[in-house]
Length: 167
Image (cartoon, rainbow, N blue to C red; front, side, top):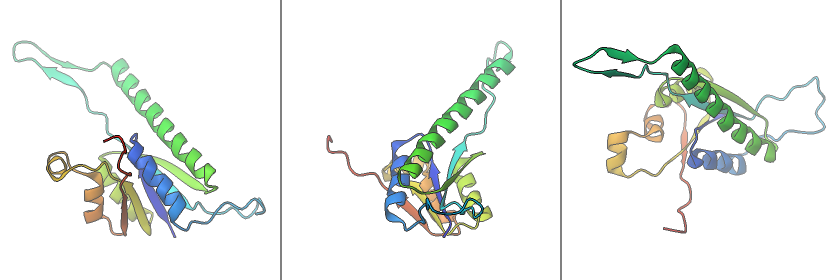
């Protein structure tokens, strides 16, 4: 079974990954497997970077200002660092559960890129976290999990984090 788990910087997405590792029957890494017979990954963890948008200010009195190449490079490096950090945390969780995982970073609109990845990889199950937005916030802000549930061609498991005890 091919499982894709979408993660971002939120604790909710890492909780969804942990839930999947604990509850979905995935094959564990065997320590006795010969080196020649490479096991396929049990799970693929994907992180979506938002596309870089040129920040500018349009002043009706003055000129339009664009970001310098140095600023653009700085933003891209920050995005790469953030992606590496997110995937490092996800990989560590997989190792703790002795699950072989593949990681990937894609760039674009998270909703669309996650659905596209499931189609390209012929995924059997997509796991996404939920921030627990109410109906009004979800209507205005949109919801990655809601979009995936309605547009993915495979089953989608939406994992909600447990309710905090300090509320």
